[in-house]
Image 1 (spheres, helix red, strand yellow):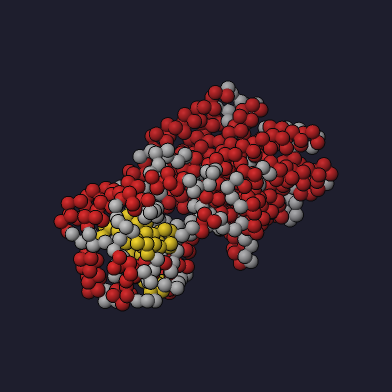
Image 2: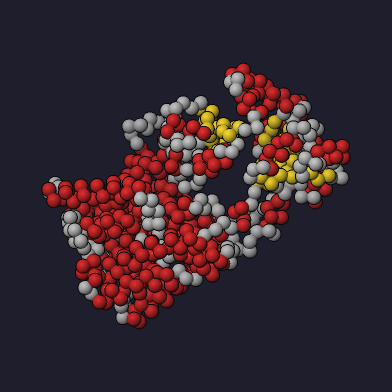
Length: 622
């Protein structure tokens, strides 16, 4: 049962958790992560200043659940596709493009960077022991090699870098900065815990995780076919896996947070729906995790820390240690990226808080660290989370490879393809046209960039770089020739091939083959029929399609800010008209009350001036 004081303390914490993000939004405080602000507020509300919150068994339980949920969600953040090597059987286009690729891949840069962190962490920990300020080399090493994946992701989202090579490199370094310390902490806890068992028993946690993954790997396919509104089976499964792996971890003498971390990885590998991730985030960051962060601040008694001269010296020394441990990340990032960006990435990699809190909690339980030392490590970590993002936001600028436009090559110049090429060239596209027809070349050469080819022989086109593009449009009237070139283009490795087919007989005979190859098809009769039908059903369509001011656009919703928001509540709905939503392989005709979902393909109309900003906002990967 809650005592009255427990209820008051919990009420104050929940009120603070509600007010903090509102105040940060109101006063536009973007340079501090929310977690850091919650720790600072916990310090102010605890015995360090106001003493409004007192620790209790109830709050300690909620704090422990909070750290378990935090590590669970951290496990879910790891994108294992980043660790995959690129396939060795490259297409001719990929092989050709490899010569223009940077010498070092994202995976190589990140691996070198984190290897340097491991080495530097051991060196800095040894120097710290020599100074006489902290004697546990292994615990210090684990703390110095940690990186806060959550803060890194937030910073990369803000700059829209999650899908860019630079962002992926920093993300992979941060992922290693959570996985490796967690493994190190497991062995450390097993070595020093009074309840430790044989180290080989820790493998049982991995066996249990593998068995749970194997048992439930088809869960989300079955989940689609049942009523979910009242059962919330995906959330029940998540909690079952968390409790199961935490129980197994503690049973074999490991820490429960390792089981929680592995539970997050298992759920991630099960490929849950975006809605599942959103609901789990809501439970964690809506209730348990703010309690954990604020209670970490409450337990940090600054009055005691500042009265100890050794602790006052230890705080800046540890901060320098966090920075030095990540110092060689600059050299690794410099292998591929600009110097200022390498500094920015190093500063972001120096941020650490999440795993530090977990490690300090475990070390305290094992009595391997004093409250003074724990407070010094925590305060230094808070400082990294303030300084790191500030430097990152100040120094980062776009890499040249991120500014590359989508390359579109048209084969065939006529009254259909030339106007399209002209309009695309005004946007985010690098457009080139090719033809072997001298008459057409003379007629349209003044209108756009056209290269005259001696012939359309495949080898000659490959030699002239016609297929060296992101998108190839075969717009000639000769269907047989388009069919042959489409197959060659796909075999060459062109990502998107769009083909004009006016001969229905050829199209009907070869449609299945072309669909299998991933070739996109169009022809004049079908386009005209579709336009006429649309004109009858929606009389404004023709005016829209032929307008010089407005047009139809498509964007995949990636911005979580707009997930589960009704169409009528989109802030810029007055600038766009959403005509269709393509979701789960079917079209939805939206109303004002239709809620948007992540990965929806939204088809909308807008002015050509405002459309780029709308597409950027909806497609922002965060």
